[in-house]
Amino acid sequence: MVWRFDVSNGDADGLCAVVQWRLHEPGPAELVTGLKRDIALLGRVQGQAGDEVNVFDISMQRNRGELQRLLDDGLRVRYFDHHAAGKVPVHPNLEAHIDEASDVCTSLLVDRHLGGAHRAWALVGIYGDNLGAVADRLALEGGFEPGDCAGLRRLGVLINYNAYGEFEHDVRIAPRLLFPLMARYPDPRDMLAHESVVDEIDAMRHSDLRLGADAAVLWQGPQGSVRVLPDARWSRRVQGCLANELANGEPGCAHAVLKVQGDGYVVSVRAPLALPRGAHALCSRFGGAGRSRAAGIDRLPRGDLSRFVEAFAEASWS
Image (cartoon, rainbow, N blue to C red; front, top):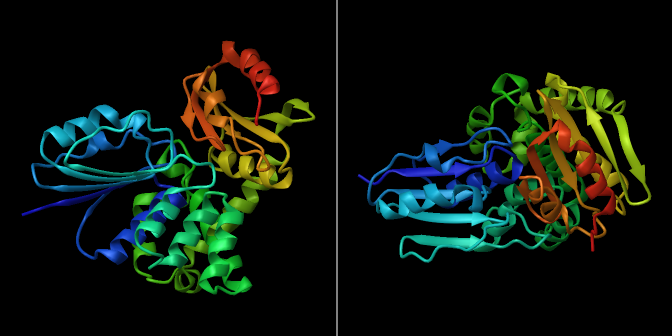
Protein backbone atom coordinates (compact mmCIF):
# COMPACT_ATOMS: atom_id res chain seq x y z
CA MET A 1 0.00 0.00 0.00
CA VAL A 2 1.31 3.44 -0.95
CA TRP A 3 1.16 5.97 1.88
CA ARG A 4 1.06 9.72 1.28
CA PHE A 5 2.53 12.49 3.38
CA ASP A 6 1.75 16.21 3.06
CA VAL A 7 4.58 18.19 4.65
CA SER A 8 3.96 21.91 5.01
CA ASN A 9 4.65 25.06 6.90
CA GLY A 10 1.81 25.83 9.31
CA ASP A 11 1.23 29.34 7.94
CA ALA A 12 -1.39 30.45 5.41
CA ASP A 13 0.79 29.86 2.36
CA GLY A 14 1.69 26.32 3.35
CA LEU A 15 -1.72 25.15 4.58
CA CYS A 16 -3.60 26.69 1.65
CA ALA A 17 -1.23 24.94 -0.75
CA VAL A 18 -2.10 21.61 0.89
CA VAL A 19 -5.82 22.34 0.72
CA GLN A 20 -5.53 23.02 -3.01
CA TRP A 21 -3.61 19.80 -3.55
CA ARG A 22 -6.06 17.65 -1.57
CA LEU A 23 -9.01 19.14 -3.46
CA HIS A 24 -7.18 18.25 -6.66
CA GLU A 25 -6.18 14.78 -5.44
CA PRO A 26 -8.62 13.59 -2.75
CA GLY A 27 -7.50 10.78 -0.52
CA PRO A 28 -5.91 10.05 2.83
CA ALA A 29 -2.57 11.63 3.64
CA GLU A 30 -0.64 12.17 6.84
CA LEU A 31 -0.14 15.88 7.50
CA VAL A 32 3.25 16.87 8.90
CA THR A 33 3.24 20.51 9.97
CA GLY A 34 4.04 22.82 12.84
CA LEU A 35 4.29 26.45 13.83
CA LYS A 36 5.77 29.10 11.55
CA ARG A 37 9.39 28.50 12.56
CA ASP A 38 9.10 24.69 12.42
CA ILE A 39 11.02 24.33 9.18
CA ALA A 40 13.05 21.11 9.53
CA LEU A 41 9.99 18.93 8.95
CA LEU A 42 11.18 16.25 6.53
CA GLY A 43 12.97 14.52 9.38
CA ARG A 44 9.55 13.59 10.78
CA VAL A 45 8.65 11.56 7.68
CA GLN A 46 9.25 7.85 8.13
CA GLY A 47 8.06 6.08 5.01
CA GLN A 48 9.18 3.31 2.72
CA ALA A 49 10.02 2.85 -0.94
CA GLY A 50 7.12 3.84 -3.18
CA ASP A 51 5.47 6.18 -0.68
CA GLU A 52 4.64 9.70 -1.85
CA VAL A 53 5.73 12.90 -0.10
CA ASN A 54 4.29 16.29 -1.09
CA VAL A 55 6.25 19.22 0.34
CA PHE A 56 4.82 22.74 0.54
CA ASP A 57 6.50 25.95 1.67
CA ILE A 58 9.50 24.68 3.61
CA SER A 59 13.06 25.51 2.69
CA MET A 60 14.83 22.84 0.65
CA GLN A 61 18.12 24.30 1.84
CA ARG A 62 17.18 23.59 5.47
CA ASN A 63 15.89 20.08 4.66
CA ARG A 64 18.47 18.94 2.12
CA GLY A 65 19.88 16.03 4.13
CA GLU A 66 16.47 14.59 4.95
CA LEU A 67 15.28 15.11 1.38
CA GLN A 68 18.24 13.10 0.13
CA ARG A 69 17.44 10.38 2.70
CA LEU A 70 13.88 10.06 1.43
CA LEU A 71 14.99 9.94 -2.20
CA ASP A 72 17.67 7.36 -1.45
CA ASP A 73 15.10 5.24 0.39
CA GLY A 74 12.93 5.15 -2.73
CA LEU A 75 10.20 7.61 -1.74
CA ARG A 76 8.76 9.89 -4.42
CA VAL A 77 8.89 13.59 -3.54
CA ARG A 78 6.97 16.47 -5.10
CA TYR A 79 8.33 19.80 -3.83
CA PHE A 80 6.67 23.24 -4.10
CA ASP A 81 8.54 26.16 -2.52
CA HIS A 82 9.70 29.76 -2.97
CA HIS A 83 12.45 30.06 -0.37
CA ALA A 84 16.17 30.05 -1.11
CA ALA A 85 16.82 26.46 -2.15
CA GLY A 86 20.49 26.29 -3.07
CA LYS A 87 21.33 23.61 -5.61
CA VAL A 88 18.25 21.47 -6.34
CA PRO A 89 19.10 17.76 -6.45
CA VAL A 90 18.62 15.91 -9.72
CA HIS A 91 16.91 12.62 -8.96
CA PRO A 92 14.31 10.51 -10.80
CA ASN A 93 12.12 10.47 -7.69
CA LEU A 94 12.08 14.28 -7.26
CA GLU A 95 9.62 16.63 -8.96
CA ALA A 96 10.66 20.14 -7.98
CA HIS A 97 8.65 23.34 -8.46
CA ILE A 98 10.95 26.03 -7.06
CA ASP A 99 10.63 29.74 -7.80
CA GLU A 100 12.47 32.26 -5.62
CA ALA A 101 11.04 35.41 -7.25
CA SER A 102 9.94 38.06 -4.75
CA ASP A 103 6.36 38.12 -6.09
CA VAL A 104 5.82 34.35 -5.79
CA CYS A 105 4.64 32.15 -2.95
CA THR A 106 3.89 28.44 -2.65
CA SER A 107 0.11 28.77 -2.94
CA LEU A 108 0.67 30.63 -6.20
CA LEU A 109 2.98 27.87 -7.49
CA VAL A 110 0.33 25.24 -6.75
CA ASP A 111 -2.35 27.42 -8.33
CA ARG A 112 -0.25 27.65 -11.51
CA HIS A 113 0.37 23.90 -11.52
CA LEU A 114 -3.35 23.17 -11.15
CA GLY A 115 -4.44 25.78 -13.69
CA GLY A 116 -6.32 27.86 -11.13
CA ALA A 117 -8.68 24.98 -10.28
CA HIS A 118 -9.00 26.07 -6.64
CA ARG A 119 -8.28 29.74 -7.01
CA ALA A 120 -10.18 30.90 -3.92
CA TRP A 121 -7.91 28.91 -1.59
CA ALA A 122 -4.89 30.05 -3.56
CA LEU A 123 -5.93 33.66 -2.93
CA VAL A 124 -6.23 33.03 0.82
CA GLY A 125 -2.65 31.75 0.85
CA ILE A 126 -1.32 34.57 -1.34
CA TYR A 127 -3.02 37.28 0.73
CA GLY A 128 -1.76 35.56 3.87
CA ASP A 129 1.79 35.69 2.54
CA ASN A 130 1.42 39.49 2.22
CA LEU A 131 1.38 39.50 -1.59
CA GLY A 132 -1.73 41.64 -1.79
CA ALA A 133 -1.07 43.12 -5.25
CA VAL A 134 -0.44 39.66 -6.72
CA ALA A 135 -3.62 38.31 -5.16
CA ASP A 136 -5.66 41.30 -6.35
CA ARG A 137 -4.56 40.68 -9.95
CA LEU A 138 -5.42 36.98 -9.78
CA ALA A 139 -8.77 37.75 -8.19
CA LEU A 140 -9.59 40.20 -10.97
CA GLU A 141 -8.70 37.59 -13.58
CA GLY A 142 -10.88 35.06 -11.77
CA GLY A 143 -13.92 37.32 -11.55
CA PHE A 144 -13.96 37.65 -7.76
CA GLU A 145 -15.96 40.54 -6.30
CA PRO A 146 -14.27 43.14 -4.06
CA GLY A 147 -16.27 41.92 -1.08
CA ASP A 148 -15.06 38.37 -1.68
CA CYS A 149 -11.45 39.60 -1.87
CA ALA A 150 -11.80 41.38 1.46
CA GLY A 151 -13.00 38.18 3.12
CA LEU A 152 -10.30 36.04 1.54
CA ARG A 153 -7.65 38.55 2.58
CA ARG A 154 -8.97 38.54 6.15
CA LEU A 155 -8.91 34.74 6.31
CA GLY A 156 -5.38 34.58 4.90
CA VAL A 157 -4.06 37.15 7.36
CA LEU A 158 -5.67 35.28 10.27
CA ILE A 159 -4.40 31.83 9.27
CA ASN A 160 -0.93 33.31 8.89
CA TYR A 161 -1.05 35.09 12.23
CA ASN A 162 -2.22 31.87 13.92
CA ALA A 163 1.03 30.09 12.92
CA TYR A 164 3.30 32.34 14.99
CA GLY A 165 4.32 31.10 18.41
CA GLU A 166 7.08 29.21 20.15
CA PHE A 167 4.73 26.58 21.56
CA GLU A 168 1.35 25.26 20.43
CA HIS A 169 -0.28 26.70 23.54
CA ASP A 170 0.78 30.18 22.38
CA VAL A 171 -1.66 30.12 19.45
CA ARG A 172 -5.45 29.95 19.35
CA ILE A 173 -5.42 26.61 17.52
CA ALA A 174 -2.47 24.49 16.43
CA PRO A 175 -2.01 24.47 12.64
CA ARG A 176 -2.35 20.66 12.61
CA LEU A 177 -5.86 21.11 14.08
CA LEU A 178 -6.76 24.14 11.97
CA PHE A 179 -6.06 22.32 8.71
CA PRO A 180 -8.94 19.78 9.04
CA LEU A 181 -11.34 22.70 9.53
CA MET A 182 -10.02 24.33 6.36
CA ALA A 183 -10.20 21.08 4.41
CA ARG A 184 -13.94 20.76 5.11
CA TYR A 185 -14.65 23.60 2.71
CA PRO A 186 -13.98 23.51 -1.04
CA ASP A 187 -14.70 27.26 -0.91
CA PRO A 188 -13.00 29.26 1.88
CA ARG A 189 -15.89 31.74 1.91
CA ASP A 190 -17.95 28.99 3.52
CA MET A 191 -15.33 28.61 6.23
CA LEU A 192 -15.64 32.32 6.95
CA ALA A 193 -19.40 31.90 7.29
CA HIS A 194 -19.47 28.78 9.46
CA GLU A 195 -16.33 28.47 11.62
CA SER A 196 -16.38 30.54 14.82
CA VAL A 197 -12.64 30.01 15.30
CA VAL A 198 -12.06 32.62 12.57
CA ASP A 199 -13.59 35.38 14.69
CA GLU A 200 -11.77 34.08 17.77
CA ILE A 201 -8.41 34.32 16.00
CA ASP A 202 -9.35 37.79 14.74
CA ALA A 203 -10.13 39.06 18.24
CA MET A 204 -6.81 37.71 19.55
CA ARG A 205 -4.90 39.32 16.67
CA HIS A 206 -6.40 42.76 17.25
CA SER A 207 -5.63 42.55 20.97
CA ASP A 208 -2.03 41.54 20.25
CA LEU A 209 -1.56 44.34 17.69
CA ARG A 210 -2.70 46.90 20.26
CA LEU A 211 0.03 45.64 22.60
CA GLY A 212 2.55 45.56 19.75
CA ALA A 213 1.91 49.22 18.94
CA ASP A 214 3.93 50.08 22.05
CA ALA A 215 7.02 48.16 20.91
CA ALA A 216 10.27 49.89 21.79
CA VAL A 217 11.92 51.53 18.76
CA LEU A 218 15.59 50.56 18.86
CA TRP A 219 16.58 52.34 15.64
CA GLN A 220 14.75 54.45 13.10
CA GLY A 221 15.99 56.10 9.94
CA PRO A 222 14.75 57.23 6.55
CA GLN A 223 14.81 53.69 5.17
CA GLY A 224 13.16 51.83 8.02
CA SER A 225 13.03 50.84 11.67
CA VAL A 226 14.06 48.19 14.19
CA ARG A 227 11.65 47.42 17.02
CA VAL A 228 11.94 45.12 20.03
CA LEU A 229 9.15 43.18 21.74
CA PRO A 230 9.33 41.58 25.19
CA ASP A 231 9.09 37.81 25.53
CA ALA A 232 5.42 36.99 26.10
CA ARG A 233 2.75 34.76 24.58
CA TRP A 234 1.18 37.72 22.80
CA SER A 235 4.51 38.90 21.36
CA ARG A 236 5.36 35.41 20.11
CA ARG A 237 2.05 35.45 18.24
CA VAL A 238 2.15 38.97 16.85
CA GLN A 239 5.79 39.32 15.75
CA GLY A 240 5.33 38.37 12.09
CA CYS A 241 1.93 40.01 11.84
CA LEU A 242 3.32 43.29 13.22
CA ALA A 243 6.21 43.14 10.74
CA ASN A 244 3.70 42.79 7.88
CA GLU A 245 1.54 45.62 9.21
CA LEU A 246 4.55 47.92 9.38
CA ALA A 247 5.62 46.93 5.86
CA ASN A 248 2.15 47.58 4.47
CA GLY A 249 1.89 50.90 6.28
CA GLU A 250 5.24 52.18 4.96
CA PRO A 251 5.87 50.40 1.63
CA GLY A 252 9.01 52.42 0.99
CA CYS A 253 10.70 51.30 4.22
CA ALA A 254 12.22 48.12 5.59
CA HIS A 255 11.32 46.86 9.05
CA ALA A 256 12.79 44.47 11.60
CA VAL A 257 10.80 43.25 14.58
CA LEU A 258 12.85 41.51 17.26
CA LYS A 259 11.50 39.54 20.19
CA VAL A 260 13.52 38.84 23.32
CA GLN A 261 14.15 35.11 23.74
CA GLY A 262 16.47 33.87 26.48
CA ASP A 263 19.86 35.52 26.05
CA GLY A 264 19.12 36.63 22.50
CA TYR A 265 16.40 37.52 20.02
CA VAL A 266 14.13 36.05 17.37
CA VAL A 267 14.07 38.35 14.33
CA SER A 268 11.53 39.02 11.56
CA VAL A 269 12.68 41.22 8.67
CA ARG A 270 10.58 42.73 5.89
CA ALA A 271 12.15 44.41 2.88
CA PRO A 272 10.36 47.49 1.52
CA LEU A 273 7.31 46.44 -0.48
CA ALA A 274 8.39 48.97 -3.11
CA LEU A 275 11.79 47.20 -3.39
CA PRO A 276 11.14 43.68 -2.12
CA ARG A 277 14.72 42.41 -2.11
CA GLY A 278 17.50 41.91 0.41
CA ALA A 279 15.82 40.36 3.48
CA HIS A 280 17.31 36.89 2.96
CA ALA A 281 20.76 38.31 2.20
CA LEU A 282 20.72 40.28 5.46
CA CYS A 283 19.40 37.47 7.67
CA SER A 284 21.72 34.84 6.19
CA ARG A 285 24.68 36.87 7.51
CA PHE A 286 23.40 36.05 11.02
CA GLY A 287 22.46 32.40 10.46
CA GLY A 288 18.92 33.18 9.30
CA ALA A 289 17.01 32.30 6.17
CA GLY A 290 13.90 33.15 4.18
CA ARG A 291 13.32 34.92 0.90
CA SER A 292 14.16 38.23 -0.66
CA ARG A 293 11.12 40.13 0.65
CA ALA A 294 10.71 38.47 4.07
CA ALA A 295 13.17 36.54 6.19
CA GLY A 296 14.05 35.78 9.78
CA ILE A 297 16.68 34.73 12.29
CA ASP A 298 15.74 32.04 14.79
CA ARG A 299 18.41 33.10 17.28
CA LEU A 300 20.37 36.33 17.25
CA PRO A 301 22.79 36.36 20.24
CA ARG A 302 22.51 39.45 22.40
CA GLY A 303 26.14 40.26 21.65
CA ASP A 304 25.33 40.52 17.93
CA LEU A 305 22.48 43.00 18.37
CA SER A 306 24.45 46.16 17.61
CA ARG A 307 26.10 44.48 14.62
CA PHE A 308 22.67 43.47 13.30
CA VAL A 309 21.22 46.97 13.71
CA GLU A 310 24.24 48.45 11.95
CA ALA A 311 23.90 45.95 9.09
CA PHE A 312 20.17 46.66 8.83
CA ALA A 313 20.73 50.43 8.74
CA GLU A 314 23.32 50.04 5.99
CA ALA A 315 21.49 47.37 3.97
CA SER A 316 20.78 47.86 0.28
CA TRP A 317 17.24 46.93 -0.61
CA SER A 318 17.58 47.40 -4.37
